[in-house]
Structures are given as C-alpha cells and as structure tokens.
Length: 213
Image (tube, rainbow, N blue to C red; front, side):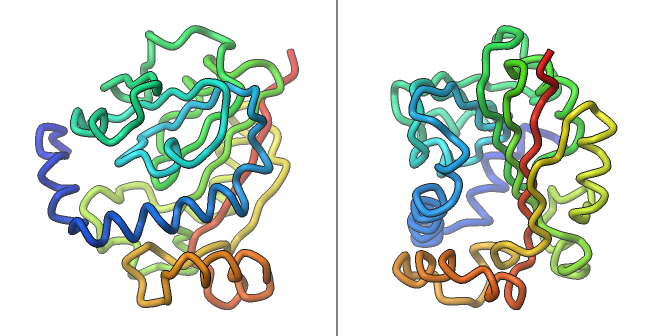
C-alpha cells in the first residue's frame, strides 16, 4: 500500500466522534487490562501507533511510538518520542533499550526488529483481529493484509525466538466500529467478566517474552 495515502485512509475510516469514542475505550483497556504488563519504570514502544490511543493512556517512564503516518505526531503527548518510519527498520531506537513493545492490528514483519530493540526478557504485547472468529469482517479494512489466528500468531512469535506467556483467543469485539455498547462504564465491566469475552470477543491478545540473554 502507498503510505502517502495513509492520512487520508485514517480520516475516512474514523470520524471525529468515532475517534473520541475509540480513545475512551482505549483508556479503559489500558487502565483495566494492559497496565498489568507495564511498570511505571518501563520504556514502552508503540508499534504502528495510529492515533496514539495506547500511548496516551498507558503509564510508563518513557514512551516511544512508530508509525508511517506523519499525522500521528500531532496526536501524541509532547514527551513521547515519535519516529515516522516502518516498524521493520527502526534505526533510531537503540538495541536492548525497550522494556515493552505493543502493537494492535499490525504484527506482520516486525518481530525480528522488535527482538533487537527489546531488552533481554522484555515483553511484546499484541492485540489483533482473530481470523478464526472474524473470517469475513477481517477484510473490511483496506490495510488488513496478513490474516492471523491466535495459533498462527503464537507460532510466528515462537519461531522468531519469543516465548509466548499468555494467549487469549477471544478478548474484545472485532473493532470499535462493532455494534456493541462502547460506553467506558460498560467496557470496564466487560473486562471484569472473561466468560463474556468468549461470547463476544473477535480479537486475540498475545503476550510474549524475548530471550533472557
């Protein structure tokens, strides 16, 4: 895909109201779930950060973000180190300097470079649509090119040298455009009841650790 068209693509995909609602959901996801994997002393790298919802709401000592869309910079807090580049090649980020990598909906071809920038024993958190449970909806987005299930993603991580520590096949619904209630109060309660995830979840969560040495 021609990256020059990314700003326009994201503008078409999310209206201002949808972006505000998406941001509110991510605030709850970070506070209610993902923060358990991130210490406030960590350096966190948000890969393909989009509009920066994860980066804005996760608490960490230092936050870095990478995205091919130059407009992402304007969506991030001033203290976030932003790099407009491909996640396949991040020369600005030193080797073994990142405690936690995170990506949502953009796992393809980033594992090797993530291993380089992660500290030994660092974590990679991935949330991705699960092609097994959303086989048709997955293709509704122009930039969805690598269909993955929770099992194929886990195999990819293990093949790259990571050790998978947590794998949740069904976590949240397919996208923030899904027709489920999105009020932060309801999302917060949704996170409290994992049995509901198994009914409504269409995205998987995978947490993997880089080699200790």
